Image (cartoon, rainbow, N blue to C red):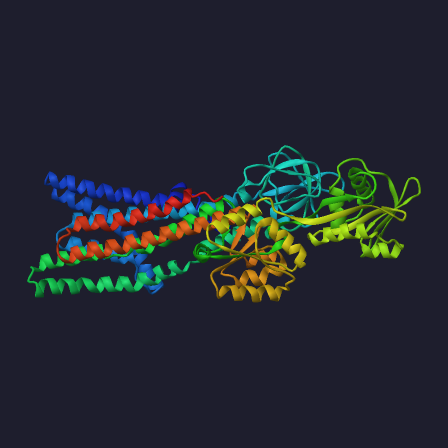
Length: 639
């Protein structure tokens, strides 16, 4: 939250606020520089030498002093030379050969390009600023006596009961206890359709409550909420660098030194070897100094990478680093965990085989006896029936076996596994046993419903695939990716899910260390993306070139991941890779263009075929061009 703290320490005077705004200050100084450039040439046309010199001095001060200060700070504090120093030296060099106007033009274009770069970077920072604005200052907490008390965000504690009214944002992650509403989660997930919430459903901090009044129990402090973690994630992402960015930064210092040293060499060769007059030789050296500056090379990668990260964040695909974006572009092996990643992560009653009576009667009776149980299979059975249920009393759970109860007519009713049947002395007929085995062969977890000593129905419960999983896998295959499933679940269950989503390479019954070993093996065969959401996926996520976590995953998997999918939508992973590939193409184009301009125009400058004004336009125009090309990624749609 450092950005929040920083914002509160800024000066409050309107002029100082304006001056401390980097982009506004940049446009002001660029405007003054332009005024000096244009005014100087106009004054020269009217032979007002003193006015011309005054206006060009204004251009040098407005366009050169900020760059000189920045260059000196880099030189003395960070012990490195950068392009700012190069530009100031080039402008002074132009003035030294009687071309103060050309030097002023250089400073104007350099100032303008720096301002455009700052504007571009600010556009990408809006992703985190948008997240920060989602934090409400506090919330209304329901006290034991029924009254409400407003508490600031930092005072909220797990267990507090919040009253959230229509149009208010949820101040912390929590669970709905009372009320029904629809919640706008678009700021976090990129999904524009509000999500219905009922008692028992989770809500995330920063999301917007719709039309209902709800009471929410706080599950964790605001500092540990999903929103707080995402802000930290985006902050760290903007601070980290990809391999290409690190190369550009390492390239800048030595290259700047080389260009500065080349100027006297070019002068000496032109003057003493080719016999040019000193003024002409110095002019050629200064022209080469301008053309050879690496501004466009330095900005080529960050302009594209940060724009792509902003586009991803807007769509609910949060990259933790530019390196992750770069690796995802090269990825050709996608590895998926099963539970909670390819599947919904919760059990559903998917099949009922009635042995006596109807399917509806079996569903109603099973829901009646299981309605008080918190076991996942019991919850799946209860959610599989929405109508009235028979009254069941004396309900008793037998751990590891099932549930027993008594109907209104005194009949015993039960739901359980084979162990429960054995304890009750009930044997299934061969035909029923075969039906039950067939369900289990399909990966379903089975239970038997019955009364007294008679089985009434077979129940098949399973974790079902995500609706978009098959489509996402098909899209990855179309892009030439190899898709693998790693899971700790039983082979029958794993293969059943794999068939439904279209995966043919499956490794089941794996421990966390087995998953890690398999990822390490796959890393030798290509660039691996690991997608998971559980605690046991963390080692594999760390080992893969790119670890991807669903936002609903465990805290450990979120920390381990390089990319977080906020909407829990696997299609966003495909869209994220398309964005990464578009970014890689943009970076390659930008670097090729920037280096090409230096080589081609530099060669012509050495031959004396490029006048200084043209060199200025070629250099600064190239810098502005690569920034604008990078900014195009802000419009990329991740879907």
